[in-house]
Image 1 (spheres, rainbow, N blue to C red):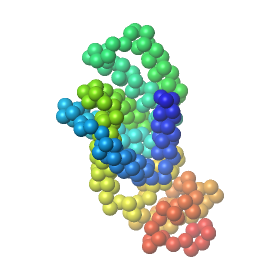
Image 2 (image 1 turned 180 degrees about the horizontal axis):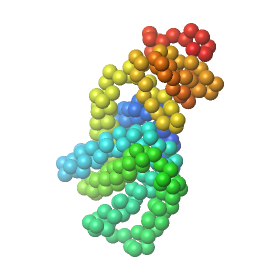
Image 3 (image 1 turned 45 degrees about the vertical axis):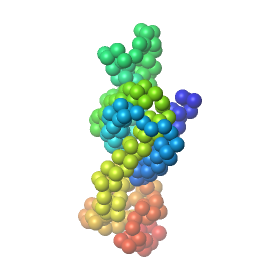
Image 4 (image 1 turned 60 degrees about the vertical axis):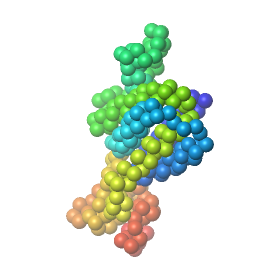
Length: 253
């Protein structure tokens, strides 16, 4: 079961990385998850009031985690970012348990976690090969993962029900992210387009683009006197553009 959950989460992260609009994909994901959590809430026992502190803390950390994850995948490769945050977060959780004595792990168990975690991070390759921004976002993501894991651990124990706590967490964290994202990106949906340039996603203002020109397996984005080569097809870009502002006049333009 744990393997299935990890595979499912890794697949979702891979989909998010490859998505043309990661913000939109993540908003849709949270917008779907939130109501599902709310449906469960209607059929579950009420939440213990002592749980709300942990629930709100975990939801706030989830919010930071979501935007940190977007930043990490904007600047870095999936295989590096995912392996760093998933390898480092267990070590941070282990460190907190030893510092605060929240769980009683044997030395052998702790060493096993360290070996596995370092092994996962080593798969990401040499640190020197990373984009420093991607590395910083990956580290922040790892901190967030460990933070909401610890907060939720206390929350579930206080609630004495994983299902009740999880339903509320999915609803609150999902709603919080959707509301924040909609506010942050308000009015920009049709004003910009996000395209890949040299393995990194770059945002272009539509008002600054003169036209698009197909160029083999790439597309030239003409901005007044300069051009930028992006990894895409003209057909794909056309599907992202508002019809009232751009019209295809030729198969290559």
